[in-house]
Length: 484
Image (cartoon, rainbow, N blue to C red):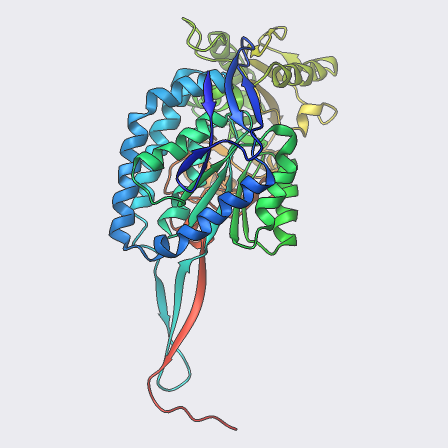
């Protein structure tokens, strides 16, 4: 059992009132972590620590920040086994998923280390004689990162890495479902030798989340907010940030379509669909939610994908022969089962057979014949279920892809790259991959969505723009004539 403390000003500490909450294993119900339940005073203290650390961190030479970020990457690599154990215990997915999380997160830190000298600017021609005008990017201040449970190491690290590279300090608000995982991220920075207060981690009881989040966003020292999670909660975060005039990056839900045109390589499409739909039990913001396939090849594709999915088994994490694990909770699994059975009751075909549920373990489901009457047509599944719609033309496929409030990731399969590119440009999404899965993430890429999938971008130079202030500074080098 893990004893999870707050990280404030470089020190591990209990909540101000000593309160705790428990996170239980979603498979067996055992208590995994006893976690400090932060008070509003603790939230204030975390921001104060970050604000106190900001002046020195923001002017630290880039090479020094680079060394520390690279050291943190190495420390994260050394904790890979710990991240796997904590992730499996707290969130129920497979060891391979959390191993991938730790590997990509370490690489995110290495990529961020390379950005420290990219926080630059430009000289802009001025019409004023003798005037040199510059646009300079500077650290914003304290950044609040709010990370979810589904890819806990990746998304917790993403909330921190680029802001730190830009010279900001950070408060990470951990997920109530993976508090020990997120707290270990904070410990990585402690062990890497980061100055006290540069990275702080707050954990809170589920019931206290609204008050703690509002207190953190409202704090005048917080200058930027980033949130990854559901669209429903994202709307609340966005409203709070707007109320306090805080720029926010929101990466929210998705109903991600894979479009399979009539000339696609169906075997490649099947492999990508199975991975994109069921990796981490479909609990990824980029998971393939809808497969829109050309009518001419639909029967063949569905048969091939059904056979593939039939060989994919879910079970207790690490069980022999099970490449899929458990969902984050029995309640989450029951919700997905209900959505699948709603579709079946309204005429859809469950090509993989009746839904099989055992607690938090749900076997993968493929549904053919989705219609607008079914809840899964609009609602984000966020579980091991994928639906098939048939399209008679490229235009109809694009129309179906865009018939959603969401716009995060998409993919198009076609042997004709020009045709695929023309289709991709018409899809309303922040991300689109041709002849590849909807699930694809790299640290240096501009990651984010449109419509109800949020706004702003994580990653690379796009992230630098989000987590810095752009200032206009001029130098008058000659006498200037003024009209009055």
